[in-house]
Image 1 (tube, rainbow, N blue to C red):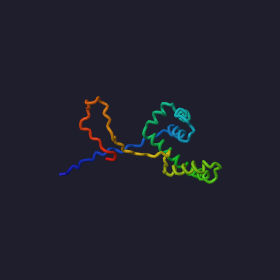
Image 2: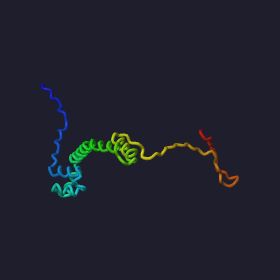
Image 3: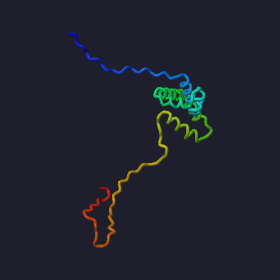
Image 4: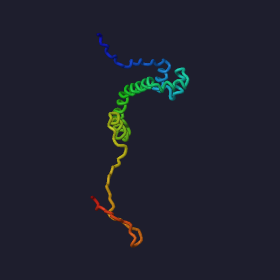
Length: 151
C-alpha cells in the first residue's frame, strides 16, 4: 500500500507589493526635504493628497520610507562629523569648542550625557513621633508601633 504523507500547511510566501513610481517619487521628496508636507509631496508626484496619505499607511510604503530615512541619515553622518571636528578645532567661540561640539560628538557615537546636573537622592524617612490631637482621655490610638529612625 502506498502511504500518504500529510502535507505541511505552510502558507505561501507573500509577494512583495509593488510600490508605484509616483508613490516612490513622493517618498523621495519627503526624505530629501523637497516637500515639507505630504500635500506638497503629493502635488510634486502628481497624486491626490488622500492617495498619498492612504499609501503611507501601507506597511510596504512605511518600510520604504523608513529604509530611505535610515539611508539618508547614514550618508549624512560623515559630513556632519567633519563639520563637528572642524568646529572643535577652529571655532572662534569658546562655548562651541568646549560645550557644543564635544557633546554633539558624544551623542553621535551613542554616549548621551545627562541633560542637567541633577542628583537623585533617596531618603527613607520614618516618623519618630506621633501627635495625638484627640481630646484628653479619648485617645483612639491602639497598638501603634513607631520605629526609631533607621529601622
